[in-house]
Image 1: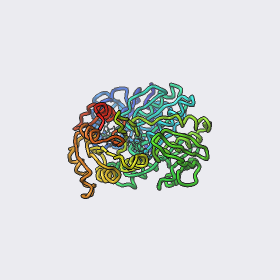
Image 2: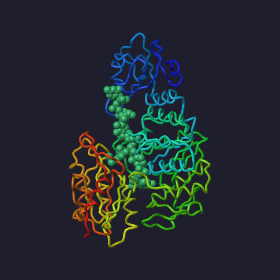
Image 3: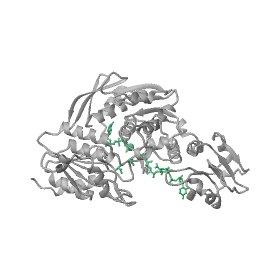
Image 4: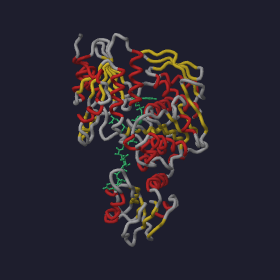
Length: 488
Ligand SMILES: CC(=O)N[C@H]1[C@@H](OP(=O)(O)OP(=O)(O)OC[C@H]2O[C@@H](n3ccc(=O)[nH]c3=O)[C@H](O)[C@@H]2O)O[C@H](CO)[C@@H](O)[C@@H]1O[C@H](C)C(=O)N[C@@H](C)C(=O)N[C@H](CCC(=O)O)C(=O)O
Ligand SMILES: Nc1ncnc2c1ncn2[C@@H]1O[C@H](COP(=O)(O)OP(=O)(O)OP(=O)(O)O)[C@@H](O)[C@H]1O
Ligand SMILES: N[C@H](CCC[C@H](N)C(=O)O)C(=O)O
Ligand SMILES: [Mg+2]
């Protein structure tokens, strides 16, 4: 067990009140988990303020507190440290508590609006194929080698994250690949992580409910690269208009990837079919079962990072060809009647545009594309009409439905989506609030050769309505209805 005094060196701009020096075995930021051997960090959040609970943690026997504002009363045997930024303090304390795991393996972070899970997961799978021990932190799940652990966030809170990395180091991991969300950057969840590399995919419309403006969203993403050490690499997509912005003031070594122009890692799509794509990376050809230009870009990022990590190029290209799609990303399901279902996690306008473009490139003009899509509640409402507009623009028919309504009224979300659909196109749209019924209707409407896209929930195995999560899996539902289809 460490003593409080050991932690204090990792806090900046501190004012210490009290003489306590308790023995500590945990760092907590939720008062309900505090006890005599934990250090409580009080943080201002989006819903409430952890400072309000300082009296309660004292009551529970906790004797060490870190906060931004000092409480009115402090027990004689306690110690309270005032810092400028509690979020930053929490992350630094967590890194120390778990003995700086990111110094003991190579950690690579992936940031951007879309493509993080895909790129991080493919790097993880590639590393496993090449014989390394490796960890993954992603939206879908966390992994330590082949052991799967549930994930509640894309990037967990600092204590969970450092604890997870500790476990990875203890299991001998050489690498850790992780998604770095903009919420995590803003809330300083990744402060204190020593990154060996950072990858930027793209920046498009999302999370404006949280960041308020696109500029603030961009700035949050940029802090990832601003804080990178000079020994690290920063690999950015220069096909994205903010790719080069990420590199401004970035001390790490700069690398670029592009499907359009000269770059350190230059890619080209030679052929694109329903079965996959023939690609050329830095003059070398490879086949992939992945579909869509955006996936060529994701694979190029993976290839670039692999080379920057010093992996053998021949082996990388060979193993890349054998990688399969990530859970809930462009997962295809075929009915015995010749209908193709695609379940995809597109929940932003740009993701939807990309997936629809990929499907329209490969479907035959005489076949229809039926899109089933909704938008999440308690999330950026401004993306709702845009997503509906894009779906209608690029599909033969659209069924607007619920995603995870969370605390919102699902009908209101659908109405807000509908506002983006021009009157002349409304004839193409059906609104069915019940997502299961919406998928069923799409399956009933589809004829041989048609494609059904079910977008937004991908790998998710629940639906959250009024705060309650019940089992729900787009893929399961689609398979069930496909079984019931008869030739038409
Ligand atoms: C908006 C947001 O990101 N919220 C996250 C944030 O909560 P918060 O700071 O707003 O917390 P709060 O409820 O206001 O409470 C403030 C403080 O009081 C404490 N408290 C509260 C109650 C109490 O009784 N006692 C107590 O001490 C809380 O523990 C907290 O420290 O910090 C919490 C702890 O880390 C997170 O669980 C929580 O995630 C919520 C559940 C969430 O939905 N987050 C999503 C939006 C998110 O983070 N998504 C991103 C990216 C998504 C993507 O693009 O893929 C992700 O990385 O997952
Ligand atoms: N490079 C890309 N550019 C644009 N869209 C993409 C790209 N890669 C994937 N997509 C689309 O975005 C969806 C989500 O992809 P992925 O899960 O890899 O992104 P993410 O950044 O991890 O998302 P989240 O922020 O929700 O964790 C995919 O299902 C696909 O529709
Ligand atoms: N990480 C994203 C995922 C959105 C997925 C979509 N199905 C939804 O629930 O809105 C978020 O929390 O905003
Ligand atoms: Mg993700």
